[in-house]
Length: 337
Image 1 (cartoon, rainbow, N blue to C red):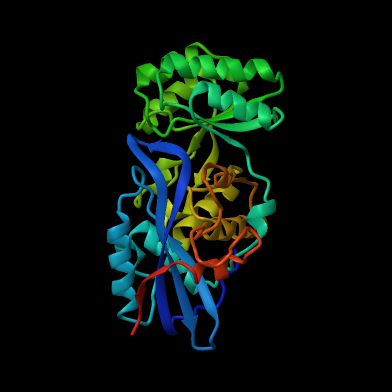
Image 2 (spheres, rainbow, N blue to C red; image 1 turned 30 degrees about the vertical axis):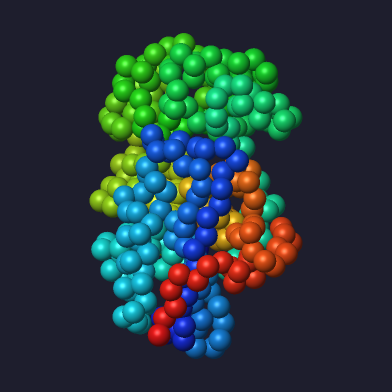
């Protein structure tokens, strides 16, 4: 991706707080959330132009809390000029937001039309209902590892029975033991797996399982380790890039170059960001698609009650209201001097 011109000098910065309720609570690694919370950073440069970015650590996945990330970005904004080169000291959510500002990443409408792999999650009945409502697409991403292995086996088999051409991208979020993953693979048709994202927290165990059952792996959480350096293995098929969990553009570009070198596919995936965050992820995906095979995992707005940043505003806001206009109606948390 071509980098824009840095604009480290700003006239004013503001932080706005948002909260987007889920239709039904979602469990993230044992943490039940009823809503997604984050802050929107608005920076006005010396030409009077506005840039935006989102900071929204995901509980259960991010190492930092929203409170910690907010405190860090305020400290950075209080000591300009802005600089992303010290990102090893920055929280990933802050490093990514800062680079979005410095590289002028726009609020793009692409996420509304970007073709995303449908995400299926919930109990078995809900997942099957979702799949049928989507008219049984040939490719889906399925969240597993949030219930018993037996229920996941039943779900996988039930989905498979609905479409003979179905390929499933499984995502276990490292939630299984070796024995649990082994049980799952032994009781499903593994030929229907496009790839599986990190069934266990052990990379060596995952490789062993992949070789045993002849399935292909995608790396996800492993890529979020700051010191991780990629070493190729024949069972690796894809890299799952969640920019707000990985951090700096420098790190993200390293993985894009890695994917290009080893002919891996890349999925740019959401961490349940707001429409503003999703719009910037879609823009980045469109830029990186010029270099590598990109798919999008941005199909997460459907889990929110509303895609409006401030549904309860006194102003009448709807889906046609530009996102930058929606931001103005959020609660202002902090303003620079």
